[in-house]
Length: 267
Image (tube, rainbow, N blue to C red; front, top):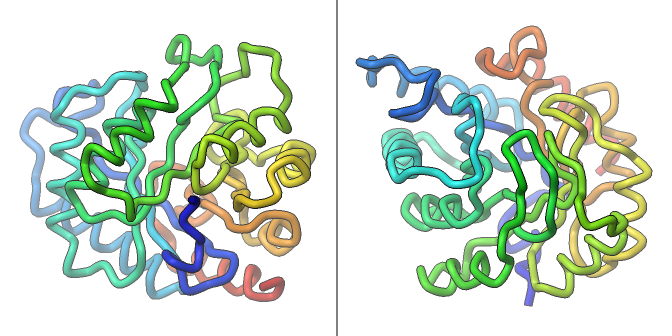
């Protein structure tokens, strides 16, 4: 049985803010001798800006690990759990983990750092910039069971960034399958991070999967969030709340407040 959103978030239609972590060890963007104190300070500043602005949840993500892969090495999960542990005493709201683009590694990291949910592609087949993206949904679900982590909600991205569906199945068919497989929420994305999702895709998913929440996963900003929440059950936002709206910049406290205030007009 799916985990209801109200078991995780206080808000009826939650706004989840991205915490983009610095590049993991071994990744092309990583520094050879990272200044851990400065990194932890920066992550804490992003968390504070998001929480003070009224965000309902946090999502820690290895967004900086460019180029992405579908099979992560162990140091990525270790880096993520280390950083979440280092800022744990600052976290006041529910949080999740997303290790791009590996759902099992994401669940393992979430289990290790006390997260409440995971975001990733968990079923379907896609031609992506990372190669063929074709996770085994049974192995994904079994990872949660194996780790005795049934409290972690699984949010599956059925219209992922950087990818197109291979099997020719419609958004409605993919949404219905995700619901049937027992995932806890469905995500609808735009073509890349920070670019708006398709309203048609979201409404198609909503019409097909009526018993599972549908999130807008990319491109939602202060100007569009109210309208989005008339259709969606929640929003995940990153770039729109960064300085100058750029994905890899620090979180901008003013942009957070603007987005949350706009969202509160429709929920």
